[in-house]
Image (cartoon, rainbow, N blue to C red; front, side, top):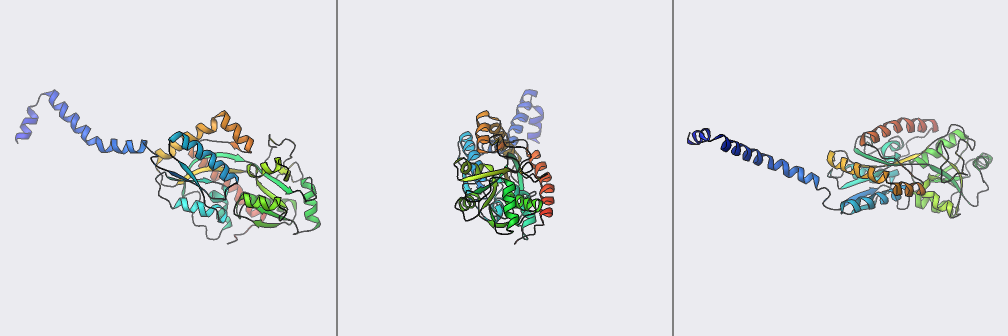
Length: 338
């Protein structure tokens, strides 16, 4: 009762002081949590690239990791986990702690296509990965090794029709856009090509250049250096419009397959329960880089068109692309391979 009488007998300023002190004490745990959130990252962040080093996913992943390391003063380390069309690395990330210290560079394969290409898909690319940002859209390029007697896509189609099943094409992996886009081309052009899957763009392109495989349909950033070096012959880009850096290379539609279009895109994603403040922080940083004139110019020179946008816009893209690639897979008659 003494405590009650003493409290009631206090002057108004004293009572306000006690109440203020009590409010401050009660708020300390919340302040600590907010401060902890603001401090992310405080250690190394792993950026998983679900394909081999040297491909477009790897190139863009390292570019983004470098900028994030510079901004936050913590290392964003790229780790290549190739296999199963990107499923191996993406699945690793879906099962990682959602603490902001494990990210993945996503592609249409793990996000969308692989659910239709693998019988035992270990995760749901739309539900088990939290969208962060779309890094870039990327054309695919159809190219051939220098021994192939075709200087145009029409000549390549004629060769394939003259000897069905003899010509082979390399893809960075089963279920990737290179695989599905080539199968779509086969269906629309009425040709038969042998699929040779690899564990990434670099080994696939190496074998095309070496003559062990005749054709490549791969992301432009991965193939462009070899075209510029005179080691591959570019025949067509798979987008609806020509790529500005290759003004003399026609689109597939222009080259004789009307209505054909199949491009790729690349994202940053995180485990699905990653804190919203971390996702928002990463999104703001990525958008800043992608809007930078020098960064955008560098990406376009590599063969990528920077995108950016909100996590919600990335989720919408994935939903739209799911419809698109499902139709393409059905049209091409593709079935799960394993």
